[in-house]
Image (cartoon, rainbow over all chains, first blue to last red; front, side, top):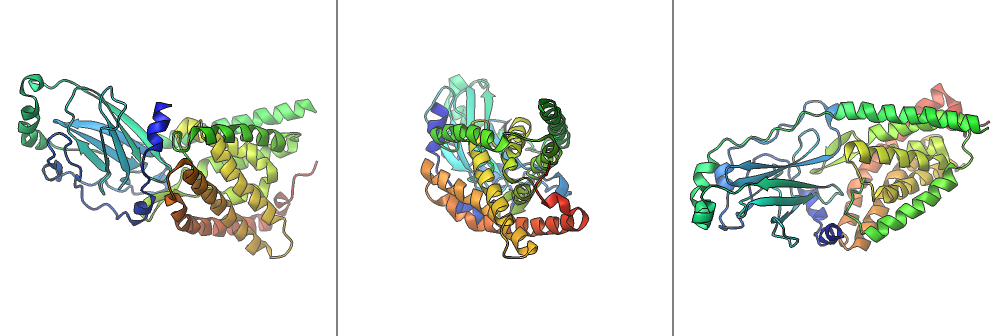
Length: 201
Length: 195
Protein backbone atom coordinates (compact mmCIF):
# COMPACT_ATOMS: atom_id res chain seq x y z
CA UNK A 1 0.00 0.00 0.00
CA UNK A 2 2.89 2.33 0.69
CA UNK A 3 4.11 1.99 -2.85
CA UNK A 4 0.70 2.72 -4.28
CA UNK A 5 0.26 5.80 -2.16
CA UNK A 6 3.54 7.36 -3.20
CA UNK A 7 2.88 6.58 -6.82
CA UNK A 8 -0.39 8.39 -6.68
CA UNK A 9 1.40 11.44 -5.43
CA UNK A 10 3.54 11.58 -8.56
CA UNK A 11 2.69 14.40 -10.92
CA UNK A 12 2.18 13.45 -14.53
CA UNK A 13 4.22 15.18 -17.15
CA UNK A 14 2.08 14.03 -20.02
CA UNK A 15 1.95 17.42 -21.66
CA UNK A 16 5.69 17.80 -21.63
CA UNK A 17 6.22 14.39 -23.15
CA UNK A 18 4.71 15.68 -26.36
CA UNK A 19 7.21 18.48 -26.46
CA UNK A 20 10.22 16.40 -25.56
CA UNK A 21 13.00 17.08 -28.03
CA UNK A 22 15.08 14.36 -29.54
CA UNK A 23 18.17 13.55 -27.55
CA UNK A 24 21.25 15.26 -28.81
CA UNK A 25 23.52 15.98 -25.86
CA UNK A 26 24.16 14.06 -22.71
CA UNK A 27 23.86 16.91 -20.25
CA UNK A 28 23.06 16.06 -16.69
CA UNK A 29 20.47 18.57 -15.64
CA UNK A 30 20.06 17.44 -12.08
CA UNK A 31 21.69 19.02 -9.07
CA UNK A 32 23.32 17.38 -6.13
CA UNK A 33 20.81 17.25 -3.31
CA UNK A 34 23.52 17.65 -0.78
CA UNK A 35 25.73 20.37 -2.04
CA UNK A 36 23.17 22.03 -4.24
CA UNK A 37 25.72 22.21 -7.02
CA UNK A 38 25.06 21.04 -10.49
CA UNK A 39 26.96 17.88 -11.27
CA UNK A 40 26.20 18.29 -14.93
CA UNK A 41 29.13 19.89 -16.71
CA UNK A 42 31.72 17.59 -15.26
CA UNK A 43 29.96 14.55 -16.69
CA UNK A 44 28.79 16.05 -19.93
CA UNK A 45 31.38 14.28 -22.01
CA UNK A 46 29.38 11.07 -22.01
CA UNK A 47 28.05 10.06 -25.41
CA UNK A 48 24.33 9.95 -26.04
CA UNK A 49 22.95 6.41 -26.48
CA UNK A 50 23.14 5.38 -30.09
CA UNK A 51 19.75 4.65 -31.64
CA UNK A 52 19.49 1.07 -32.85
CA UNK A 53 19.91 0.31 -36.48
CA UNK A 54 17.06 -2.04 -37.15
CA UNK A 55 13.45 -1.00 -36.45
CA UNK A 56 12.62 -4.66 -35.93
CA UNK A 57 14.71 -4.62 -32.78
CA UNK A 58 12.81 -1.66 -31.36
CA UNK A 59 10.98 -3.77 -28.85
CA UNK A 60 8.77 -2.00 -26.38
CA UNK A 61 9.58 -1.52 -22.74
CA UNK A 62 11.60 0.68 -20.44
CA UNK A 63 14.79 -0.10 -18.58
CA UNK A 64 16.09 1.83 -15.60
CA UNK A 65 19.59 1.19 -14.33
CA UNK A 66 21.52 2.83 -11.53
CA UNK A 67 25.28 2.90 -11.66
CA UNK A 68 27.81 4.39 -9.30
CA UNK A 69 30.19 6.75 -11.07
CA UNK A 70 32.59 7.81 -8.40
CA UNK A 71 30.40 9.42 -5.77
CA UNK A 72 27.63 10.21 -8.21
CA UNK A 73 24.81 7.76 -8.79
CA UNK A 74 23.71 7.93 -12.41
CA UNK A 75 20.25 6.66 -13.28
CA UNK A 76 20.03 5.69 -16.94
CA UNK A 77 16.57 5.28 -18.47
CA UNK A 78 16.03 4.01 -21.96
CA UNK A 79 13.36 2.30 -23.97
CA UNK A 80 14.30 -1.04 -25.44
CA UNK A 81 16.50 -0.43 -28.39
CA UNK A 82 18.36 2.34 -26.60
CA UNK A 83 16.12 5.37 -27.17
CA UNK A 84 16.56 7.55 -24.07
CA UNK A 85 13.54 8.32 -21.90
CA UNK A 86 13.62 12.12 -21.79
CA UNK A 87 11.68 14.33 -19.37
CA UNK A 88 10.49 11.42 -17.24
CA UNK A 89 9.51 12.10 -13.65
CA UNK A 90 12.09 10.72 -11.23
CA UNK A 91 11.36 10.16 -7.55
CA UNK A 92 14.25 9.41 -5.25
CA UNK A 93 14.07 7.69 -1.87
CA UNK A 94 16.89 7.64 0.66
CA UNK A 95 17.73 4.33 2.40
CA UNK A 96 15.10 3.36 4.95
CA UNK A 97 12.92 6.37 4.18
CA UNK A 98 9.38 6.30 2.88
CA UNK A 99 9.32 10.03 2.31
CA UNK A 100 10.36 11.31 -1.09
CA UNK A 101 13.92 12.56 -0.82
CA UNK A 102 14.15 14.34 -4.14
CA UNK A 103 12.18 14.64 -7.34
CA UNK A 104 13.36 15.64 -10.76
CA UNK A 105 13.19 14.83 -14.44
CA UNK A 106 15.51 12.98 -16.74
CA UNK A 107 17.49 14.99 -19.23
CA UNK A 108 17.26 14.52 -23.02
CA UNK A 109 19.73 11.64 -22.79
CA UNK A 110 17.53 9.85 -20.24
CA UNK A 111 19.93 10.50 -17.36
CA UNK A 112 19.34 11.59 -13.80
CA UNK A 113 22.19 11.93 -11.32
CA UNK A 114 22.46 12.54 -7.62
CA UNK A 115 25.07 12.37 -4.91
CA UNK A 116 24.02 10.03 -2.09
CA UNK A 117 24.82 11.37 1.37
CA UNK A 118 24.31 8.06 3.18
CA UNK A 119 25.28 4.46 2.52
CA UNK A 120 22.39 2.06 2.05
CA UNK A 121 19.74 1.08 -0.46
CA UNK A 122 18.74 4.05 -2.61
CA UNK A 123 15.60 3.71 -4.71
CA UNK A 124 14.40 5.63 -7.73
CA UNK A 125 11.05 5.44 -9.48
CA UNK A 126 10.90 6.63 -13.08
CA UNK A 127 7.61 7.48 -14.76
CA UNK A 128 7.54 8.67 -18.36
CA UNK A 129 3.93 9.84 -18.11
CA UNK A 130 2.89 7.35 -20.78
CA UNK A 131 2.09 4.50 -18.46
CA UNK A 132 5.64 3.20 -18.33
CA UNK A 133 7.00 3.03 -14.82
CA UNK A 134 10.05 1.28 -13.48
CA UNK A 135 11.92 1.21 -10.22
CA UNK A 136 15.56 0.60 -9.60
CA UNK A 137 17.66 0.20 -6.48
CA UNK A 138 21.33 0.59 -5.77
CA UNK A 139 23.23 -0.42 -2.67
CA UNK A 140 25.63 2.40 -1.89
CA UNK A 141 28.51 1.31 0.29
CA UNK A 142 30.02 3.50 2.95
CA UNK A 143 32.70 5.56 1.28
CA UNK A 144 36.07 5.51 3.04
CA UNK A 145 36.51 8.62 5.06
CA UNK A 146 32.91 9.68 4.68
CA UNK A 147 32.20 9.48 8.39
CA UNK A 148 35.16 11.61 9.29
CA UNK A 149 34.84 14.25 6.64
CA UNK A 150 31.12 14.35 6.22
CA UNK A 151 29.97 16.84 3.64
CA UNK A 152 33.40 18.01 2.74
CA UNK A 153 34.45 14.59 1.55
CA UNK A 154 31.55 14.49 -0.85
CA UNK A 155 32.44 17.92 -2.05
CA UNK A 156 36.17 17.46 -2.33
CA UNK A 157 36.02 14.25 -4.32
CA UNK A 158 33.65 15.78 -6.75
CA UNK A 159 35.92 16.84 -9.55
CA UNK A 160 38.25 13.91 -9.15
CA UNK A 161 35.55 11.28 -9.42
CA UNK A 162 33.70 13.04 -12.18
CA UNK A 163 36.72 12.68 -14.41
CA UNK A 164 36.15 8.92 -14.54
CA UNK A 165 34.94 7.67 -17.88
CA UNK A 166 31.18 7.49 -17.89
CA UNK A 167 29.72 4.76 -20.02
CA UNK A 168 26.18 3.55 -20.29
CA UNK A 169 25.67 1.18 -23.16
CA UNK A 170 22.29 -0.50 -23.55
CA UNK A 171 22.30 -4.06 -22.38
CA UNK A 172 22.43 -6.81 -24.95
CA UNK A 173 18.83 -7.59 -25.74
CA UNK A 174 17.44 -11.04 -25.06
CA UNK A 175 14.01 -9.88 -26.22
CA UNK A 176 13.93 -11.93 -29.42
CA UNK A 177 14.39 -15.05 -27.30
CA UNK A 178 11.70 -13.97 -24.88
CA UNK A 179 9.43 -13.29 -27.83
CA UNK A 180 10.06 -16.79 -29.15
CA UNK A 181 9.37 -18.22 -25.70
CA UNK A 182 6.10 -16.30 -25.43
CA UNK A 183 4.94 -17.38 -28.88
CA UNK A 184 5.81 -20.97 -28.02
CA UNK A 185 3.76 -20.71 -24.84
CA UNK A 186 0.78 -19.27 -26.70
CA UNK A 187 0.85 -21.93 -29.40
CA UNK A 188 1.28 -24.60 -26.75
CA UNK A 189 -1.69 -23.22 -24.87
CA UNK A 190 -3.65 -23.23 -28.12
CA UNK A 191 -2.97 -26.92 -28.57
CA UNK A 192 -3.94 -27.59 -24.99
CA UNK A 193 -7.18 -25.62 -25.36
CA UNK A 194 -7.97 -27.47 -28.59
CA UNK A 195 -7.50 -30.83 -26.94
CA UNK A 196 -9.52 -29.75 -23.95
CA UNK A 197 -12.50 -28.48 -25.92
CA UNK A 198 -12.40 -31.44 -28.31
CA UNK A 199 -12.38 -33.92 -25.45
CA UNK A 200 -15.25 -32.13 -23.74
CA UNK A 201 -17.48 -32.74 -26.72
CA UNK B 1 -1.55 1.52 -23.86
CA UNK B 2 -0.30 -1.00 -21.33
CA UNK B 3 -0.81 0.34 -17.84
CA UNK B 4 1.85 -0.89 -15.43
CA UNK B 5 1.24 -1.87 -11.82
CA UNK B 6 1.01 0.98 -9.36
CA UNK B 7 -0.10 3.65 -11.83
CA UNK B 8 -3.84 3.45 -11.44
CA UNK B 9 -5.53 3.30 -8.01
CA UNK B 10 -5.58 -0.24 -6.64
CA UNK B 11 -9.34 -0.06 -6.06
CA UNK B 12 -9.95 0.55 -9.77
CA UNK B 13 -7.54 -2.23 -10.73
CA UNK B 14 -9.11 -4.80 -8.44
CA UNK B 15 -12.61 -3.85 -9.57
CA UNK B 16 -11.45 -4.25 -13.17
CA UNK B 17 -9.94 -7.65 -12.35
CA UNK B 18 -13.26 -8.87 -10.97
CA UNK B 19 -15.09 -7.47 -13.98
CA UNK B 20 -12.55 -9.19 -16.25
CA UNK B 21 -13.29 -12.55 -14.64
CA UNK B 22 -16.95 -12.04 -15.49
CA UNK B 23 -16.10 -10.94 -19.02
CA UNK B 24 -13.84 -13.97 -19.47
CA UNK B 25 -16.65 -16.30 -18.44
CA UNK B 26 -19.24 -14.63 -20.66
CA UNK B 27 -17.00 -14.40 -23.72
CA UNK B 28 -15.25 -17.74 -23.31
CA UNK B 29 -18.09 -20.12 -22.55
CA UNK B 30 -18.98 -22.83 -25.02
CA UNK B 31 -15.86 -22.41 -27.13
CA UNK B 32 -15.87 -24.89 -29.97
CA UNK B 33 -12.63 -26.68 -30.90
CA UNK B 34 -12.92 -25.22 -34.41
CA UNK B 35 -12.48 -21.73 -33.02
CA UNK B 36 -9.31 -22.49 -31.11
CA UNK B 37 -6.71 -22.36 -33.91
CA UNK B 38 -7.85 -18.92 -35.04
CA UNK B 39 -7.80 -17.72 -31.44
CA UNK B 40 -4.27 -19.02 -31.06
CA UNK B 41 -2.99 -17.27 -34.14
CA UNK B 42 -4.65 -13.98 -33.31
CA UNK B 43 -3.35 -14.28 -29.75
CA UNK B 44 0.18 -14.82 -31.00
CA UNK B 45 -0.01 -11.76 -33.23
CA UNK B 46 -1.53 -9.61 -30.47
CA UNK B 47 1.27 -10.75 -28.18
CA UNK B 48 4.03 -10.06 -30.66
CA UNK B 49 2.89 -6.84 -32.30
CA UNK B 50 2.72 -4.88 -29.05
CA UNK B 51 6.44 -5.37 -28.69
CA UNK B 52 7.28 -3.54 -31.90
CA UNK B 53 7.45 0.09 -30.99
CA UNK B 54 8.14 3.23 -32.93
CA UNK B 55 9.42 6.59 -31.76
CA UNK B 56 6.78 9.32 -32.09
CA UNK B 57 6.85 12.85 -30.68
CA UNK B 58 9.49 12.12 -28.10
CA UNK B 59 7.94 8.98 -26.72
CA UNK B 60 7.39 5.48 -28.02
CA UNK B 61 4.18 4.01 -29.34
CA UNK B 62 3.29 0.61 -30.64
CA UNK B 63 0.66 -1.05 -32.75
CA UNK B 64 -1.85 -3.41 -31.17
CA UNK B 65 -3.93 -5.03 -33.95
CA UNK B 66 -6.93 -4.73 -31.64
CA UNK B 67 -9.27 -3.93 -34.52
CA UNK B 68 -8.10 -6.95 -36.47
CA UNK B 69 -8.53 -9.16 -33.40
CA UNK B 70 -12.07 -7.90 -32.87
CA UNK B 71 -13.01 -8.42 -36.51
CA UNK B 72 -11.59 -11.94 -36.68
CA UNK B 73 -12.72 -13.21 -33.29
CA UNK B 74 -15.73 -11.19 -32.15
CA UNK B 75 -16.32 -11.63 -28.43
CA UNK B 76 -13.69 -14.40 -28.26
CA UNK B 77 -11.08 -11.66 -28.44
CA UNK B 78 -11.45 -11.05 -24.69
CA UNK B 79 -9.87 -14.32 -23.44
CA UNK B 80 -7.28 -14.13 -26.21
CA UNK B 81 -6.38 -10.59 -25.20
CA UNK B 82 -6.20 -11.59 -21.56
CA UNK B 83 -3.74 -14.39 -22.29
CA UNK B 84 -1.63 -12.16 -24.53
CA UNK B 85 -1.50 -9.41 -21.90
CA UNK B 86 -0.70 -11.89 -19.15
CA UNK B 87 2.26 -13.25 -21.12
CA UNK B 88 3.43 -9.76 -21.96
CA UNK B 89 3.45 -8.88 -18.28
CA UNK B 90 5.09 -12.19 -17.38
CA UNK B 91 7.82 -12.25 -20.00
CA UNK B 92 8.47 -8.62 -20.87
CA UNK B 93 7.25 -6.74 -17.75
CA UNK B 94 5.09 -4.87 -20.26
CA UNK B 95 1.93 -3.97 -18.40
CA UNK B 96 1.38 -5.44 -14.96
CA UNK B 97 -0.24 -8.23 -13.00
CA UNK B 98 -2.57 -6.17 -10.84
CA UNK B 99 -3.50 -4.03 -13.81
CA UNK B 100 -3.94 -6.93 -16.25
CA UNK B 101 -7.71 -6.85 -15.77
CA UNK B 102 -7.85 -3.14 -16.42
CA UNK B 103 -5.75 -3.50 -19.56
CA UNK B 104 -7.94 -6.36 -20.75
CA UNK B 105 -11.09 -4.31 -20.25
CA UNK B 106 -9.64 -1.20 -21.91
CA UNK B 107 -8.38 -2.99 -24.99
CA UNK B 108 -11.24 -5.46 -25.01
CA UNK B 109 -13.66 -2.54 -25.23
CA UNK B 110 -11.79 -1.27 -28.28
CA UNK B 111 -11.72 -4.71 -29.91
CA UNK B 112 -15.42 -5.27 -29.22
CA UNK B 113 -16.22 -1.88 -30.73
CA UNK B 114 -14.27 -2.96 -33.81
CA UNK B 115 -16.27 -6.19 -33.99
CA UNK B 116 -19.47 -4.17 -33.71
CA UNK B 117 -18.44 -1.71 -36.43
CA UNK B 118 -17.49 -4.62 -38.68
CA UNK B 119 -21.06 -5.93 -38.50
CA UNK B 120 -22.51 -2.70 -39.91
CA UNK B 121 -23.94 -2.95 -43.40
CA UNK B 122 -23.60 0.61 -44.59
CA UNK B 123 -20.07 1.65 -45.58
CA UNK B 124 -17.94 -0.58 -47.72
CA UNK B 125 -15.37 -3.04 -46.39
CA UNK B 126 -12.50 -0.61 -46.68
CA UNK B 127 -14.10 2.16 -44.67
CA UNK B 128 -15.51 -0.20 -42.08
CA UNK B 129 -12.13 -1.85 -41.56
CA UNK B 130 -10.49 1.56 -41.17
CA UNK B 131 -13.10 2.71 -38.67
CA UNK B 132 -12.79 -0.55 -36.75
CA UNK B 133 -9.03 -0.25 -36.49
CA UNK B 134 -9.27 3.43 -35.59
CA UNK B 135 -11.90 2.98 -32.88
CA UNK B 136 -10.08 -0.03 -31.43
CA UNK B 137 -7.16 2.22 -30.49
CA UNK B 138 -8.94 5.45 -29.66
CA UNK B 139 -11.49 3.91 -27.30
CA UNK B 140 -8.87 2.24 -25.05
CA UNK B 141 -6.84 5.45 -25.06
CA UNK B 142 -9.86 7.42 -23.96
CA UNK B 143 -10.69 4.88 -21.22
CA UNK B 144 -7.08 5.01 -20.08
CA UNK B 145 -7.26 8.82 -19.90
CA UNK B 146 -10.41 8.59 -17.81
CA UNK B 147 -8.75 6.10 -15.44
CA UNK B 148 -5.74 8.35 -15.05
CA UNK B 149 -8.09 11.24 -14.33
CA UNK B 150 -10.02 9.21 -11.73
CA UNK B 151 -6.76 8.26 -10.00
CA UNK B 152 -5.93 11.93 -9.66
CA UNK B 153 -3.35 12.62 -12.34
CA UNK B 154 -5.35 15.48 -13.81
CA UNK B 155 -6.27 15.73 -17.45
CA UNK B 156 -2.76 15.28 -18.81
CA UNK B 157 -3.44 11.85 -20.20
CA UNK B 158 -6.47 13.05 -22.14
CA UNK B 159 -4.25 15.45 -24.05
CA UNK B 160 -2.37 12.46 -25.34
CA UNK B 161 -5.45 11.43 -27.28
CA UNK B 162 -4.15 13.49 -30.18
CA UNK B 163 -1.01 11.36 -30.17
CA UNK B 164 -3.06 8.21 -30.04
CA UNK B 165 -5.20 9.48 -32.91
CA UNK B 166 -2.09 9.26 -35.07
CA UNK B 167 -1.46 5.70 -33.91
CA UNK B 168 -5.13 4.89 -34.46
CA UNK B 169 -4.96 6.16 -38.04
CA UNK B 170 -1.94 3.99 -38.76
CA UNK B 171 -3.67 1.05 -37.15
CA UNK B 172 -6.81 1.76 -39.20
CA UNK B 173 -4.80 1.75 -42.43
CA UNK B 174 -3.08 -1.50 -41.47
CA UNK B 175 -6.41 -3.09 -40.56
CA UNK B 176 -7.79 -2.07 -43.94
CA UNK B 177 -4.77 -3.57 -45.68
CA UNK B 178 -5.04 -6.78 -43.71
CA UNK B 179 -8.77 -7.12 -44.33
CA UNK B 180 -8.39 -6.50 -48.06
CA UNK B 181 -5.65 -9.10 -48.17
CA UNK B 182 -7.72 -11.64 -46.24
CA UNK B 183 -10.75 -10.88 -48.40
CA UNK B 184 -8.60 -11.68 -51.39
CA UNK B 185 -6.85 -14.84 -50.25
CA UNK B 186 -9.21 -16.38 -47.71
CA UNK B 187 -12.60 -14.67 -47.49
CA UNK B 188 -14.10 -17.29 -45.17
CA UNK B 189 -11.84 -16.18 -42.31
CA UNK B 190 -13.83 -12.95 -42.13
CA UNK B 191 -16.96 -14.89 -41.25
CA UNK B 192 -17.62 -16.30 -37.76
CA UNK B 193 -16.51 -19.90 -37.34
CA UNK B 194 -19.36 -22.24 -38.18
CA UNK B 195 -19.51 -25.69 -36.74
